[in-house]
Length: 352
Image (cartoon, rainbow, N blue to C red):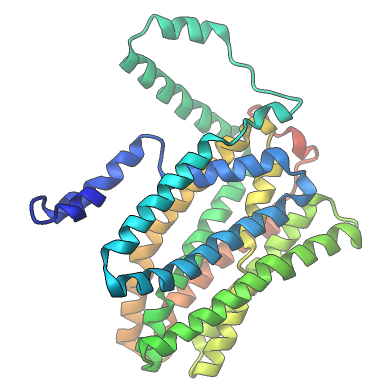
């Protein structure tokens, strides 16, 4: 990608589309994030996992809040400065990964690899080994999903949450078009949303988690289920308030409600990690990362179309993208309300 931009006078810019092809090797950022959550799941007990996941989400949000303005300041002098700065940051991040210690040994139960497969792999060529491992991995993941109905149900719930919360990416355009605000004024509304999201992730949700454990006597997984349910309801309320907001005040109120539900993905992820045996935590987090990418690919065109259609129809239809997002999150929340924890959640495995 960087080479295409640097040699744009020689290399056609459409070659930039092929930059994602390199993510076939290693999976790119989605796999990196999945592994970070796996590291956390390996070293943090179940009852404290949701809080740490919330803190990780806050770190991601904080980095996005800082990166935009900082990149804009850098571009004042030279547009290449933020490009090279991002390359350095990515390089440092990859170097840090190299010093991460292995965490699998922290578990009493470990996944045992069979020696017969290793012996048979030695008799295959490199390409054959690669294809065999890919085929075996896909079969294992498929069996894992089919054999774990609880996990599959929660992954579906997570997917609908991702579809719904993607509407946040349209807030600027929505506010400028519906309320005829300038981009600078609309950006202030994003500051309100981000500020309340940070408060939710770092203060309100951890407090609610502690209260459920210490005063309501819930188990860690029961607590995650109930926090996910109520976060979903709050998010739906925020979507509907924004959709029906006829002025900036109501729009801001809706944004606050929307932000108060920003912890739902973290608690569902914590629940998923707590439902499976330790040696399948990486598989679960990778599946979630995959569904996040699929969800964003689907949500982008769908919500953008609902935005253009709603603005074209006008009136009460102007809030159509948030009604659509509310329907997605309502589906996710409904799944959480009908979801029941297995009797022995710590032993959910391929044969469950």
